[in-house]
Image (cartoon, rainbow, N blue to C red; front, side, top):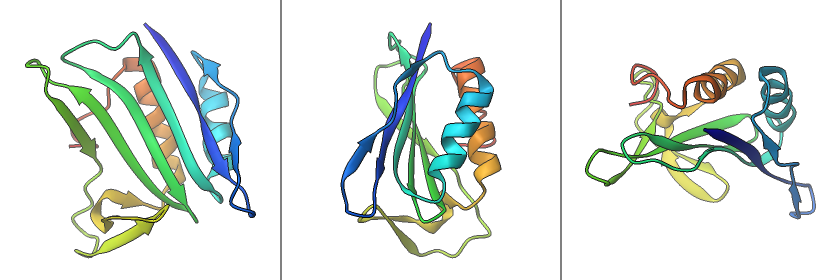
Length: 134
């Protein structure tokens, strides 16, 4: 299976700057891209190609001002689409704005190391532990 890694950053003028698309990125490249994007706003994705039913096919990161929302998109065995996110039960039960949309604060983290670890796990295994993203 091939992993494709890329996305975009929103610059201070509101323009989208496309990130270089990388096939089967190494861990160091994943970390460098995620850390460089952490203080910006934008979207970073890693996709399995080709997609296959019964497993995750895309990990998406939405970032704004060091707030990170991760979404793991997958098809279940019946072909239904599911989205898994982080769930921090210690967070307030409120909404947080990321890129103009509201999301549960419990699904958002400020831990860039956790974000890096999740992307690296997805690149290695084509999945993320259900203990981390439910």
